[in-house]
Image 1 (cartoon, rainbow, N blue to C red):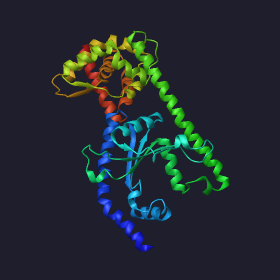
Image 2: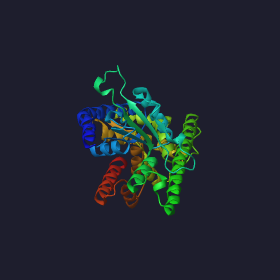
Image 3: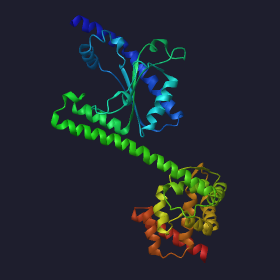
Image 4: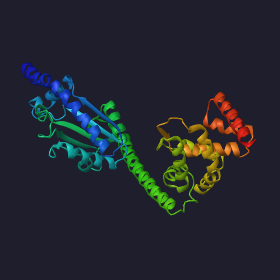
Length: 354
């Protein structure tokens, strides 16, 4: 028996170098495929089954796996995404670049009983396709890919850590707790999907309102501010003039930290923001010309227009020194830096208004 076991494990030892090559090739392929497919994921995890784990599985399932080469999970990958709909998107992309053994793959989302213990997930058994330039000796290996959301991943990791793989091993007095948690996570996944869809609908509504010049009533939030920066004619004209002054390319960044700063000026809607920009555009261009001419910059954040508009309002809006300090402390938590910015603003005011 030990001789047979040693013979089986020798097959694993002899394959280990090829398994490592396979792991690297597939990992790079999956990362590139998902990136080009436009799917933002949390993580691609991967591992090669350890010698000890292989020995245990061969012993536990000796009839099903008399040889190491029959194991389909010697190399395993886990693609962890944020939303449930991305699971099917990832699976479709993977099916375009890898050979998928549909008979051995399992979609537990469809096969699990509604009352059964456990969490839903999708598992593919794959191999590298022949004739696509991959090393021929690697195309014969099967490997597993698991597709999961962040919450599905959390469930699987905690379940694994607790050491329970089936409902039969769980003490009766805690089985109900397991079921409750599994249900809560499934509901949470569905709810996040609903929230994502509602945000997408809201974004479309905002885009349409801005395009039709009917967005003045919209409240200022991250969605409306992002779309305003990208689509408002008033903002785009200002950004173009700043880009012409600096010679730099504008790059899109999140304007989230601008919301608190705009709130300082009492800006609550896109209409109020638009009026602020219209009133301070010339001053903003003046300040941009002073600081950006000849600066030799390659890129500027597309929030630069807001930066100069707010700076113009601080300089030309008659704010008292203590009010300037309150704003600067929003931008710079470091008190010394905030104090220096107040001095700079006051000197600029004196120079422009003398």
